[in-house]
Amino acid sequence: MFQPDANACAVRRRVLRAGGVLVALALVRPALADANGLKAAIAAYSSGREAKPGRVAIDVARLVDNGNAVPITVRVDSPMTAADHVRAIALFNERNPERDVARFALSARSGRAVVSTRIRLATSQQLVAIATMSDGSLWSGAIDVIVTLAACIEGEG
Amino acid sequence: MARTLITVPQDAKRGDVVEIRVLIAHPMETGYRVGSDGKRVPRDILRRFACRLDGEVVFAAELFPAVSANPYLAFPLRVERSGTLSFTWEGDGGFAQTETAALNVA
Amino acid sequence: MRRALAALALGVFASGVLVAGSAQAQQDARRSGYDDMSPATQAMQRDDTQNPAMLFVADGEALWKRPAGSDAKTCASCHGDVRTGMRGVAARYPAFDASLARPVTLGERINLCRTRQQRAEAWRAESPDLLALEAYVALQSRGQAITPPNDDRLAPFRARGEQRYRQRIGQLDLACAQCHDDHAGKRLGGSTIPQGHPTGYPIYRLEWQGLGSLQRRLRGCYTGVRAEAPAFGAIGLVELELYLASRAAGMTVESPAVRP
Image 1 (cartoon, rainbow over the protein chains, first blue to last red):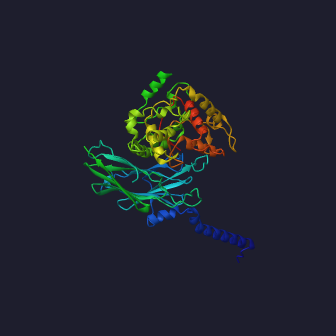
Image 2: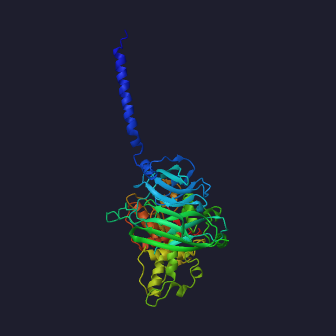
Image 3: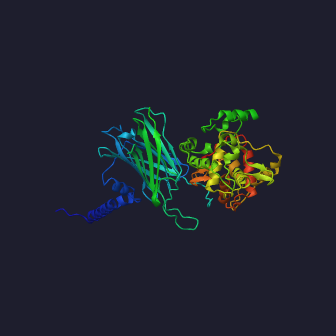
């Protein structure tokens, strides 16, 4: 008769416990991974639809002079024809007080899918741009930016 | 009336894709800044921008506090014929301003 | 030297394209703050359709033509077209004012014109109108060489300005010279320490999110080393501006510049 020994039972209990911890971690991790609500903000914008990474390029200095005015250009690879063009570009940030940065509406009349502006960045963080195409598909691009604030703290000028 | 600086290329030919640039003087007060009195300065930003060609929207933007003071926008437009461009900014405190510029296309 | 300066002035385009400081003379180690900025910020300054300071220059243009004071005179009434009347003027400031018997900055000169000639009220230091007009006038020197006046009466003030530049101050016990001469080019908290040449004032400073004068910047440095900042218009600040201008003599005016 097969007699499981005490050690095997102990090992099994340990494995089950570890498995339980792993399951618990798996449940907790998504929240940890979106501590700033960036994923949630994007999900709210896209009504939960997934954006495929690609076709969207964010052009920004990797190390900015001052977070108050960071020049940024978002480019989307698209023929911009009536049949196939970018309808909207939405820009999100990770660590400002609010996730939204700006949203742009384009059309086939735009000719090119490229928009430039200047944005505020509170600290080093990730930026994500979501492009909505005329066929409803979503594409995304992301970039990490390092922000160093002005070194000398001065009072009201 | 806020000061604006609008740049529309004047040498465009039919079918060209030009870049239009707009700058407007506005503090884009985020609502998160603390003034010298220790109190938060209330939000006061521009929220919407639209560019129309002969009345039809060809570009629009929704702006949030993360957009810098004196907001700058550069956007493309494929030009087919001459017309009138209008640029409208709307924002907090009932801010509303429209500027126009001629689009001359060869 | 004069021929080199003339050649420099001729070689710079009115559209604001900046000739690098190193083009002046083979041995000139001086760098404008422009050279220490990222390419994106440089592009913001270089292009008049993108430079936020140009919004305020447009305000200055309107002010140039606006009647003021009891006689309703405009700047144009005496000075005519700004491009000829104000050409090269900003590049020569601070300059000596005989009746005050001391040097004055461009901003102070504008206010002296307002009170003496237009019989209007002086504008408050750093007020939007004063800065806008200063930017408009300074633009008329863009591309020219900083040319401090060859005026013996300025000598004692300039000497005191240099003394102030080398004087340790504040809780951090630092002199301007230590950062801007000895450690220029190195980094302070991620920013490159510039040499501190007043090549572009009034500047659109990203940190201020607006336009400001050299005096505002100097006062910011005082606060930065935890010293008490002199009041706007204090003679000590004017003397320091005077010294800085002579230290930057020959460098190209970039006004109105963009700085981080």
